[in-house]
Image 1 (spheres, rainbow, N blue to C red):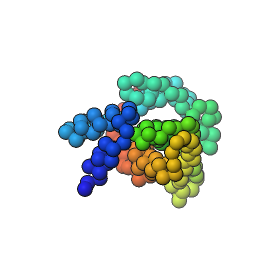
Image 2 (image 1 turned 120 degrees about the vertical axis):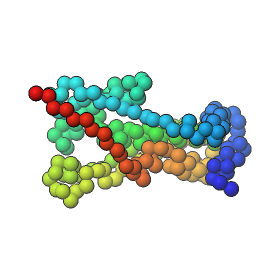
Image 3 (image 1 turned 90 degrees about the vertical axis):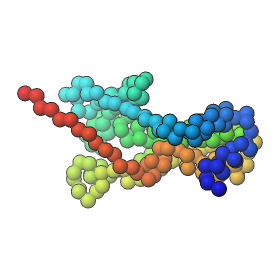
Image 4 (image 1 turned 90 degrees about the horizontal axis):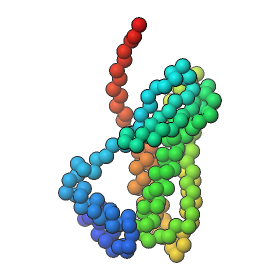
Length: 192
């Protein structure tokens, strides 16, 4: 039996009082009929303002809402770290996606959450990006999640299912864990 059918069959046996379950049933049917509709695009955009300041910028998150978010450069690479830096945003993406996934899955499993606290951190040796040591890769060398989940009227088996489900279903976790290629389209203009 294919995994998708197994998942759908098991989901049908879960309480139908779950709002997540009910919304997912509609989406399962939609995406099974039209797989192309399951493709979404998340976006962020930085439009350079005050380009004389090399240490701060603003990123607009979401291409429709354009929520502005100030960004700073980390002290370790010469900035003031007076605003969250891109690494902080990467950790925020991981923590928020993981926690959101836990909420969704716990709702479907009928697990009542009392408290959650998800912390993510990332370690990087900045000598690579500063070109001090070319043998040091320009990337985060490791990331870590600490998860506190307090629930009531459940058992260890259900909590194990919840954590494994979150690891399996968290898009940011899976993307970072596996890595993906990034394409780049560049337009360069010189003005006199």
